[in-house]
Structure formats: structure tokens, C-alpha cells
Image 1 (cartoon, rainbow, N blue to C red):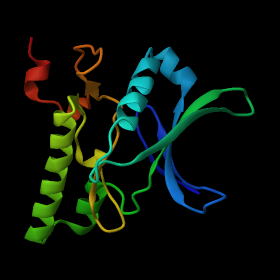
Image 2 (image 1 turned 180 degrees about the vertical axis):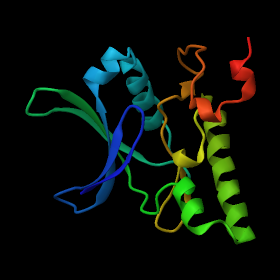
Image 3 (image 1 turned 90 degrees about the vertical axis):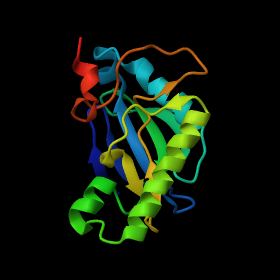
Image 4 (image 1 turned 120 degrees about the horizontal axis):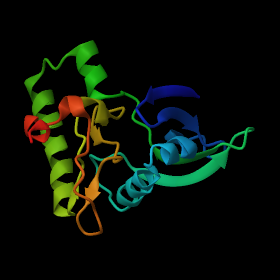
Length: 173
């Protein structure tokens, strides 16, 4: 239907299921680009982690598949819950957070999502306002598990996340 956002490795578009008429978000990732950057395993890690979790304050994972365009380029498509009120970053820039009760609820809901992940030995590694979405009722929904680590399975110790949001100790020798 329309483009929602774009990140370093993907674009996210609003889509409609032609049968049910339900609205979803589709995260589209170029297989070729990820292979060229040697990051394809990161995408499969994201899928594996996101499909294994379910929490009211985490964007719901529905499905994933691959498609090819007319040029035979392959793309991974991840179907996710659509959050109509966008990112917390955009929301704060447009509306601010004036109401203290709203602030407390948002903070508490985000903390609940993080607690759930940690209880399941998952670390998000890229929490930032752009990765916190708001549904139609302004409920917090944590998204984007591209840098996440699952300590229940094999993982690496690579530093991950957005450099602009990283703790200063990541840059020290």
C-alpha cells in the first residue's frame, strides 16, 4: 500500500492481505545485498528469534518467505504486525510526551518487553526510539530483531546495534 520506513538493510511497507483484508507490515530484505555484506545469517537469526517470542509489547511475527522480482533478484519478506501510529521517535517529534501517565505507561510497557526478552535469554542489542512502535491505541511494541542475540543457542560476541546509540565503552580498547 505504501512505504513505512527504511533501515540500513531493509525497507518496510504497509500491505493488505487480499483475502482477509487485514493490514500488515512487510519487512523486505535483499538476499544479494546481505550476501555481499556477509550478513545473510543475521537475517535468519532475526527470523528465528522473532518467531520464537510472543509478548503484548513486542511486534507480532506472522510469517516469512522469499520472492523474486522480474530481474530474478531474491528478497526475504517478513510479515509483521502493523503499528499505525509509527515509531516513538516520530511520535515524540510530532506530539511530545506531555502527559506523565502516558510517559509512565510507555516506559513500563517497554521495560516489560525487555524483561520478557531477558527472561528468555534474548538480548535486543538495538533499542532506540526508532525501534519502538505504537499501535492504534498507542501501546508500545518493540521491533527489529536484526541485531538480537539468543543465549540459548549459538551466538557470537560481536558488538551489534546502531553506533549512534552505543554505550561509550564499546569504542574503548
